[in-house]
Length: 95
Image 1 (cartoon, rainbow, N blue to C red):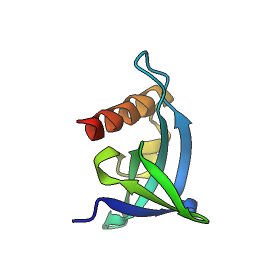
Image 2: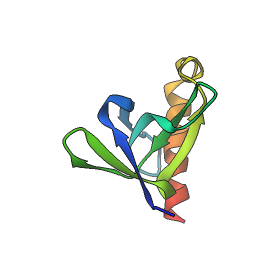
Image 3: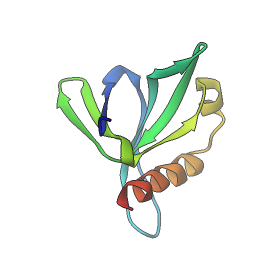
Image 4: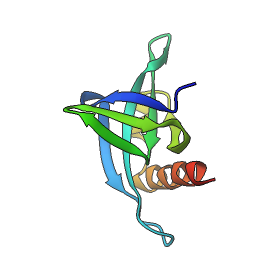
């Protein structure tokens, strides 16, 4: 099993930094078209990602978690919830 998945820049829909009392962690929210089923695109958050070439990033699967299933669901999530999930993805990978 690969430890990294490739994400194209055009699939990144949000970048940010968590604002938790335990530290700041950069994150991206992206569309995972590789996981789509029946026209549903998974929206994921990752806190361990690197640009490997112009417009292409690799995200470590251990610092990555699902956020929601569709863009419509994503539009209804608060930035606070996104940051909590981003911090959770950081803690998932840190274990």
